[in-house]
Image 1 (tube, rainbow, N blue to C red):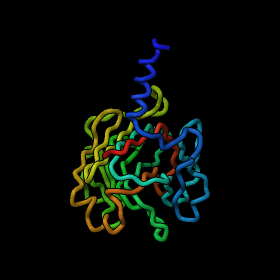
Image 2: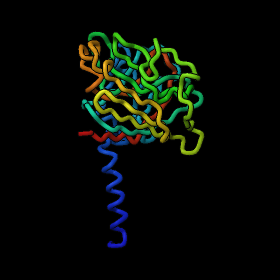
Image 3: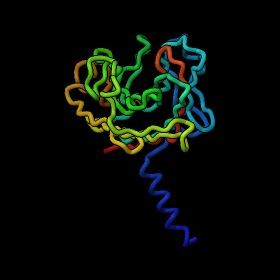
Length: 234
């Protein structure tokens, strides 16, 4: 036993560094679907092969549908794996510090984009908060982004390349948000004056809120997430 103890301690230390799991690998316990009533029970989100899976293939007649975590967070270091498929042109994303408005059927808050059909966008930050609704990193006037405006150095694996999984890391501390895709830095947002502006304060988002995975409106999407860990920062 003494021979293996150092290895066990190292493994335990590595697990502790990642924080606590937000996905048990088997069920959607700790998560719930937020969407307009017509889309809420269509089963777009499920667990398949040990991964949270969004599947709207052949069912594009839907609005936005989010899978929302049950617990809210402020400052944190979030890591997860995402797998995209060449045949799926849909868009997804990881909402952070966000909050769902039942009356409006809308999830306000910043979103880290996940876009397999244009991987150069993945990791950049689009703000879904009403009153903003545009790219905030890079800062652009609306939802349009051209390849030249995306990451200059990025790596992305499709499901048929290597193990098919990509590592996404998101660190939120105060008004700063940083992201990495497969170890490469992407966004480095100084959100002072934005994430704490009147629109965000009115909806109680930007600095604290819930984590969610997005199915974009009218998209034919197949995408998977797993190994979701969060470490709260003090």
